Image (cartoon, rainbow, N blue to C red; front, side):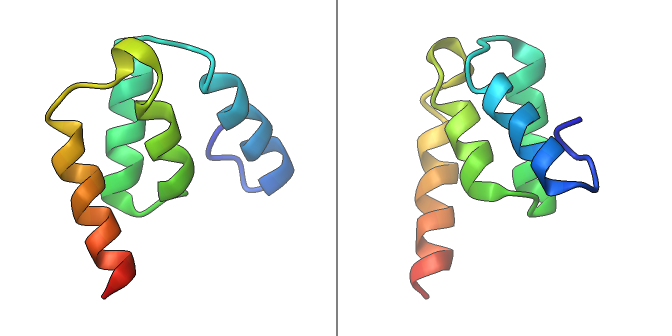
Amino acid sequence: MAQHTDWDVAIRAIIALEKIEHPSVRAFALESIERGYSVGRMVGLLQQGSNYQESDWAIIENLTRQVND
């Protein structure tokens, strides 16, 4: 649902995922960032408790650099 072609459906699914801490949510967020899908929202998924790992900071920092270039 988080990749649904109807953005309203996708965004609601992503918002629901933002409340979940689970390795599969983390994996989904990382894969989506790699594909360039809703990157800002996917960073939000990584920020949830156990979904975040220290190595994620490098990913977030790199994304910030890309936006600012």
